[in-house]
Length: 326
Image (tube, rainbow, N blue to C red; front, top):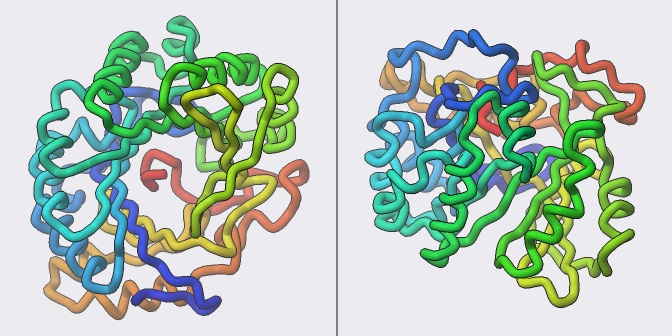
């Protein structure tokens, strides 16, 4: 088992397959002309599998593949198939553009739940946010997943003045569709132009929804990052990830492995541990993993201690979201 100094057991590993993406969302990627990590510095398929096996042997029960956009990697199907043979729950977070192409591999790997990042239900605004005209392709692929009885969660980063006016539209989508909308508080990362006045809080989101719908809290599961809710008569549900205003650090069980093989013990940690170089040098990486997680701060990487309204994003020492993997 892998634990930190606060007694938190870590059995959930998020693996970023690439920092590449076919979208250019401003809150994730610093700029359009982004220098992606050279392929030689990324974990190769056999290295991902080798590291994953080490984590699984230490009690990891769930692996989530992230990016960038994980499914743009040329060997994504090979990686998914290999990881699908491990005794873990395998899930993916994706922008949904390549679902149709890779659906056979996803089904073969036994993937039963997929998170789709979608910040708007308006095609024009989708183009504005992602700088790519692929809205209808994403919506079609979401329907494809539902047709195959694969669970779908929609990740929507709420930003004031941009898409907060669509919160009720997303809730309405759950009326006849078995999806969960996950409203995410806008978080600061390197280069994403975060300011507190763009952030829509947990309470503000709930207030908007309560104007039009009856909201009932739902009991969560251990290690949940999202606060869950249901609306009577709706086939789907919604949840709120309140990292900024009501963090869930006390039950955190997550570890993050970046595409270049660095272990981050928190999304906001200012340090990381190089597992890939050690692996390539045929060193034992387990002591490095244990030391990294043991040094995990009590909450929010030790960097976001002040109330979000007083937070200066420029003082945070971290990567951009696309190089972390969410």
